[in-house]
Amino acid sequence: MKHGFVKVAAATPDIRVADVEYNTEQICRLIDETAEEEAKVVVFPELCITGYTCGDLFTQDLLLENAKKGLQKIATHTGNKDGIFFIGMPLAVDGELYNVAAAVNHGHILGFTTKTFLPNYGEFYEMRQFCAGPKEARMISFDGKMIPFGPQILFVAEEMQSLVIAAEICEDVWSTVPPSIQAAREGAVLIVNCSASDETIGKATYRKNLIEGQSARLLCGYIYANAGEGESTTDVVFGGHNIIAENGTTLAMGQRFVNNVIYTEIDIKRLLSERRKNTTFQLVEDRKLMRVPFDMKIQETKLTRAFYSRPFVPGEEGERARRCEEILTIQAMGLKKRLAHTHAKSAVVGISGGLDSTLALLVTAKAFDALGMDRSGITAVTMPCFGTTDRTYQNACKMSKKLGATLKEVPIAASVEQHFKDIGHDPEDHSVTYENSQARERTQVLMDIANAAGGMVIGTGDMSELALGWATYNGDHMSMYGVNASVPKTLVRHLVHYYADTCEDQELKEILYDVLDTPVSPELLPPKDGEISQKTEDLVGPYELHDFYLYYMLRFGYEPSKIYRIAKEAFAGEYDNETIYKWLRTFCWRFFAQQFKRSCLPDGPKVGTVALSPRGDWRMPSDACVAGWLKNLDEME
Image (cartoon, rainbow, N blue to C red; front, side):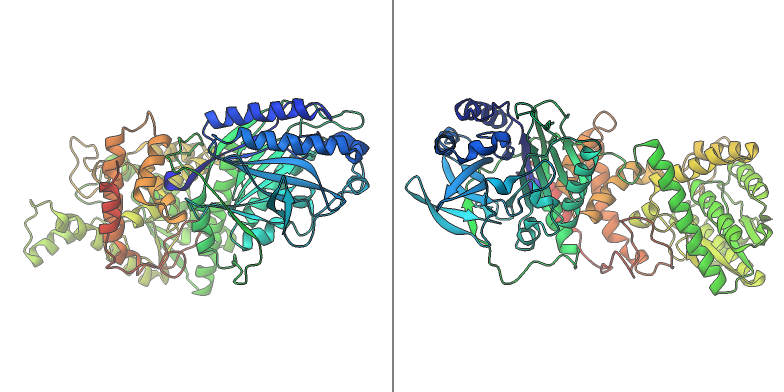
């Protein structure tokens, strides 16, 4: 369970209605299978020891006694299995019959969680046989031992105290106030559901959305094990629709109408990080629920869940297009408000022929359209200097004209050379002074043009550059409104590509495609044979790696060693382990060292769940020390 990953399973056994002996054997068989797969939390369907569809047979003492014997056999079978198992069964207590989920661990019955809400509508008539569970848990005698019995029992792993599990049963999660709500408020981070939900048209989609929604609402993992083939088909059919979700996302889902076992890993630490950040998720101080300890060996979980290498970019094309349109609109609406509020007569954009400035110009054009302003009020300024190539220069000029902006060319080489003389810098010394002098000269030009035109400078820098500090302080770092400030580099490319794909102007489309094919570069060093000599990713590393690091470090608070572990999975076959480690170390160092630039960022719109504004999502002292994060990498096995 290193890094908080816990392997879990939802298992639907083959059963025969009322054949407890056969069902017990099948449950034990799946326990063996899940143990071989090293699953630590395994959930079986509702009343699976007997079958959910026994009807009035539940009133037969023979069936109930056989169910107790079946559970005892299952408990004994788990003696040498490392995990906690939840099995649905009927249980008679004090003359009443209850629908319960029995928790079993290392040969012991830990407790019986009772079903709170009994459906008695449509095809369901549970109140005919069962009683709703009590309001609070108590101890009952079972097989000569005192066992917890009741709702919302919390099962706590002794070796991993953050792993707190609670069970509910089928209809409970469909109710207006599911029992899992209180369980989560008292610390349950993993909810299991022993269910018998039949299949009707459209119900599978609703069920999936329900489980995803509950896991999102409670910031928890949710394991839903459903009854399947083998249940009676007298009036309904059960499909074995198993679902495992984590904070609103389905991690694994079984094929319907096939009895199966599904596996994945729940990230407990990720969920706890979410809860710490979400101030509206409040744990109750006055805890009333019964807590039951259980044992579980600590070991490294082999990961099977997928980690998408581009977490900021939707993998599905249709969703990606919708996301791009939404982001462009958010950017444009943010700028629209700022232009209207300041009564700006124009907007000034430094245009280089690169991706970031292209996106800024496209967004500015969209904002002007929303305001009903003529695009000629956009001043697109190209400022060729020592590193400018003909390709980027031509693309910048052509694109500005096609978008209807006013193109203004201001060569800055002479001004920068004069500046070198003023400060005594040798032009042959291509150090950081050589580069930053150009960046700051460009910013001065843009600011002064904006003053003269009664306008404002639109920032072009993206979030990935801000994370790495890849911006000249008070150079391209500064603007009057930064429209790209929360857009990561991997997403910038898709936004420009989306605009090109949906653009009706064929010439503009071709220009944008060529911009997309141009290497990312600040163009501050002289070209070699007319080609870009300074490629950003050769210097700071691949942006797809840095965006991956940024996402998991800020969104979920992952430590570097955990990021390295999942990055190896996500980028397998694309980057070797040495490359991933090298640039992760670079990312950590630069992220801490460059916070001072983020502490004084211009305004800009937030578009996603990760942002670096010092007034919003990320507030960090500029002199925080990176030592602990680098040590975490050094100490990896």
